Length: 247
Image (cartoon, rainbow, N blue to C red; front, side, top):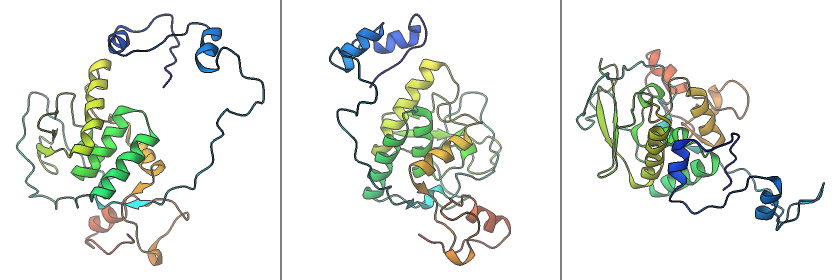
């Protein structure tokens, strides 16, 4: 991993973070060549030393826990200290748990698709909470408890679930620990994605080829291959209730 710093000095937070991580530093182009190209600059047009073989795009995985990610509900975050009770699922069905194989593959894809700790943690959190994007945006930097693994989401007006604590499966803990550290380093109040990051989270899921179950081919509209995010949401909003989907 290479960190490029476009400023004369490291920030204080970054300096503290790197204090316990063994790493070399390069301040000039020659020093960078010495680290990455054995002291010799690459020749123009030269092929990489290890040419990557293009791999076929992985198949999309349909996950019911993503059904509400795009939901336009509007839960309100708490303004002060709040320690919510465990989620009781009185207002909506619990999300369908991921199988071990699904969890492992989803985690691998998120790791491979983004290095942004907040976006990765937001998408991972959706997979075990079934939460909407607005619910994810209520999580603050102190709403993750590492031992035992718990994540608090807020809703002081009880629009959806009320304030509730969700158990965090072991595979998702690494994402939430990274997001918490990132929030503390940057001083942001949002542990997961911020209010304006909905397109980025949806784009990450699409790039990782994770999507909610899709409408049957007979009723699907729009560009072929595009992800329909709000199909189940739209049906329920119009009073049709859940319907079978292409899984």
